Every structure is written in C-alpha cells, then in structure tokens.
Length: 396
Image (cartoon, rainbow, N blue to C red):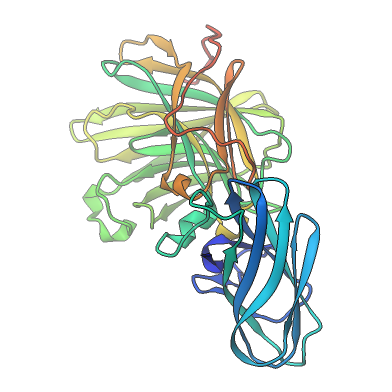
C-alpha cells in the first residue's frame, strides 16, 4: 500500500487566480458540489487498484464520487470527525498517468470536507508507481517540471549578443506559463501568460548579490534602469533572487512567432548595461523593452539556455509548450554563430513528474511540460536541430 498526499498531487478543475483550496495538508473545507478535484499518479503496469480516503467531516452526511477511466465508485460519509473510508476497486487495462476525479454531492447543511490523503493498493501498484511524496516540495512539484535546453557552444567565445525566436502552438499557452527565449547568468527574456485577459513580454535582470529582497541590497550593488521603451513598466522583484523586471502588456498570439534579442555593453570598469528587445511582427520593427545597468564588470552572456515553466501551482496540470528557433549569438569580435545543439536539463521535480519532453523539430527545438501526458524525455538528452545559416537582422 502507498499513501498519496493530496497536498502534492491534486488540482482543482475550476481555477481562480490567487484563490486555492489546496494547501500542504490537502483540500481544506470543501463545501461546494460545483467544485471538482483531480489527483494524478503514474502507474507502470495494469491490474487492480483499491482506493481508501482519509478525510475530516464537520457534519454527518456527504457523498463523494471517485472516478477513474470513466468508472465511478461512491464513498458515503455517515459521521463527523477524522475518518478513513473505503472507496472501491478498479481494474485497469492501461498504464501511464491516471486521473482520479473526486466530486462532492448530497451534503448536509454546513458540511465541510477536508481530504488529506489517498491510500492505494492492488496489483497495479509497485515500486515504479510515481507521485509526489511527503517530504517533497509541494509548491514546486505542483507547478510541474521546468524544462531547460542548454545551448552548446565553445567556452572560449565571449558573447555580447543573443537572438532567439519563439512560437507557442495553439493549446499550449495555459495560464501561468513562462516561455523564456533567452536565459543567461544575469537575466532572462520571453513571453508570459498572466491570466485569461493579460499577457506579457518580460525582460528581467538579477542583482549580482544573491538576496531575495531588492531593497535589502546596498544601493550601489543593485541593478538600475537607465532606459525603457514605450508602454513598459519596470519594478523590483524578489523571492527568486532579486532585481528589476521590465514588461509590456502585449496580447501575443499562439501560432505566431516572436523574436527576442539581448545585448550587453561594458560601460565602465565596474558596470555593464544589459539591453532587451523584442520584434513586433504587427509593426515589423524591433522594440526596446529596457536597458538595465548592473554592477558587473565587463560582463558577457554566459550559460545560455531557453526554458518553459509554470508559476501558478493550481495550473501545473495544464499543458504548456513552445518551439524555440533561430538561435544565434554574436561574439566580442562581431562574428555571428548559429546554435543548433542543445542539452535537455529538467529541474529536480522530474523525479516525481514525468510529464515533460523536449525534441528537435526540423529547424527548432520543441519543449513540452505539464498536462500529465505520457512520453517523457530522458534528462540530459542531446538535441540537434537543422541549421539554417540565416543570420538574423537585429537592432545591435
């Protein structure tokens, strides 16, 4: 028998930004039959699956409906208090990711149900059953695997500029998605889905001093804005290191391609200026996002990668993916180099989540994460896309 903590493996079907009923302890005070939850796990073989649920009921009557592969079992709550109740047995003829849907029906007035864990047994359960266990970081695991592709190029190159193009396919732009076209040792640039009605183009630079509070860093050691484009907001950020983020509220579209360009200039012995641009396909021109001065002497662009991630845990069950193409870098001698080799580098959540993949796709790399699909890419896989030899036109 295995115990699956609700707090690390469960998602609401109806999602509301900045509101969630799922905490570390599980589903708390569930009162509405209109809400439904789903628990995910990966089974490595077919067979029987028996389910028990551990819950707390405030009142003495409620009906819970559990469904797997369109087969349902009813769990009746007939008393108040902390309870462990049998749910039922399923006979599964397929393996891979399974979704356990849970609905609440027919409750007494004032009833509130809290679910903390599911206990599973049966012939389909073995040592290769995968889920987020107690002791893992539920916050990051519910967000899913952040998938990086690290670009391979000679370490002797001193890079001053980088260019990449992103295309997000229809259906892969779920809320909470970040498609980072260019990420390097001091910053990142790309597309974000903030909500149903808001999308961003974002360019951020970290403070070199690793502190999660921007204003806790001495002023002379902080990054500073020196220029920004039209309709750009700039504000400090924290909790992932700290620095300045600059963003444009821009309604980017799926199945459209957006190009990004980053350039670094040393301005004095102790500082460098990072500039971020995106190409607006509607106006057919490069637009400055911002220029940010960092207390870094003679900086170059190092550790180049692209990645995708989810930044809202309740949306970590939704699919997100994009194509990264036209990766070019310019060195300090003004020479352009095409980057068509990369290595897959998923984050540590990949030991508990298999729903991620990366592959070469003609002249692009396609990265996919979330959605609890089957078809994982092995970590550290090596990718090679078709080289194009088409040097991009850039603003610098």
